[in-house]
Length: 119
Image (cartoon, rainbow, N blue to C red):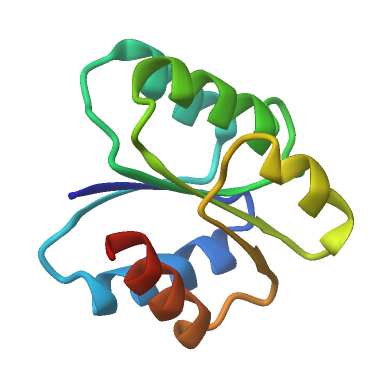
């Protein structure tokens, strides 16, 4: 399983990567602190991304923009939005996301999300 993580806060990105690796030790994880680079990766079609955790509010490309592009390349990818506010939750569901996590992200919330997405 290839899991993309997009979070512009480096500390939060490291924590998320650690939580995902603990839950799915055999997965391939692609972390991005720069949403533009994540978008380039999606558009390259070099990788088949199975799951994407993305922040919503980021410089350059928003999480909504990333997910919209990812859906063009893989309609079956599991999608998880992350935000420090519930304000974007209603809009997030228009993208058929699998989950919406409120920050701070915890090991338990990541475990629950990964479990429900793999069911």
